[in-house]
Image 1: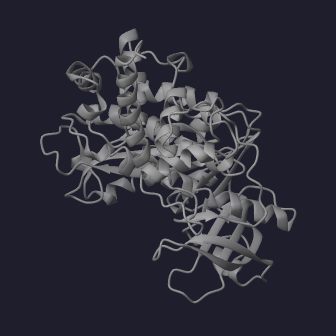
Image 2: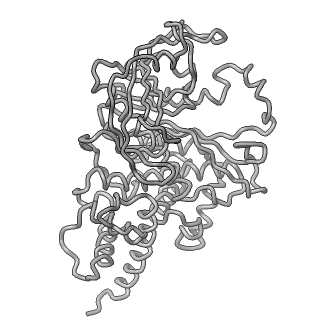
Image 3: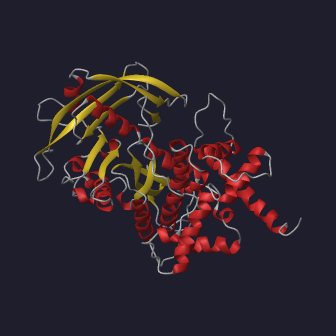
Length: 471
């Protein structure tokens, strides 16, 4: 489901948790234990550098050679593992989730390092020629569609000796298969978040595996998964034939992003839904013979080639048409995790790292992931709370420098600008035109502008320091 920007008209984007995002304090990472306080401080420093200068190489991120060397040594260190970093990231993520209902969006991505022939420990990715690392990520999103936290990350490599042995993979137990990481991610997030929080797990078609639906139920967790399998149901006919033959329940309006033009377009879609009983596959084991789900089909009323056609399975209760509308809306927020991956790869350029060990790259991916999420969060917080004080995101020095650059004035106001105004100015520094017909600024223009701003802040601080005490 790529490219959905928003859905039903009239939805209010309220209830977003405000948080200061310009710097992570080491005290907030209470479970960060890398064996030495200096390593802990280095981790926080690297993240801060990445947020300040997204897309720069490690030498460009650093203020001097000592800091560059320290960053490389941090990633090469054998005193801690990438799991130690992820443990701290989980704790930090959970501390930023306080909503009563949270959408937990899961997705998988791969990081290609085909040009790093000297790097040891990489596995195959898409084919026998591709080399890299795989990642399973889980992010928390508010019920109104704003990103809250990076909750979980699993990093692994596929052993080269397993390449081309699909037949043997079928002989493995479910827990031994790569696909089981979907279950693992869901279980981990359930354990991390407070039991009082209602968790809605959302994923695309890769998560349509029987193990996900036949997991032991959690009292306050639900599933909303896009289907790809035409499963056998107790009603007799194949699942999606059964749904497609049922009457249309309603027609809804959606605003989606066209993959061909990159522009938003309005569509109308027919919605069918019905409760179904999914039977357990004959060749699989489970304590349950079947599970009851609601199947939802959303089909665009158009003959165009890339017409929207989603088929969803959910454990959520359906009592009214508003329930179905809400669930479809929640599913559209799945695209936020794609923007997270986009920020990680295109913004922070994690695939351009030149490190010699796969373990070093895993540590870097975990570190860059937290920074990338913070960059993405800045973009969407400016949309969710446009009138908020910009100091929830930017330091005083940053917004004052930004004000001078944007207004060509040295007369700094006492009150900082709004978050929307500050982010718009930054985006304009990155190439955003701010025309009436333009939508809100996106990730690319914001991080381009932010990189320029950080360089200007550094220059302004040097000038001010040299002029200190002069009239």
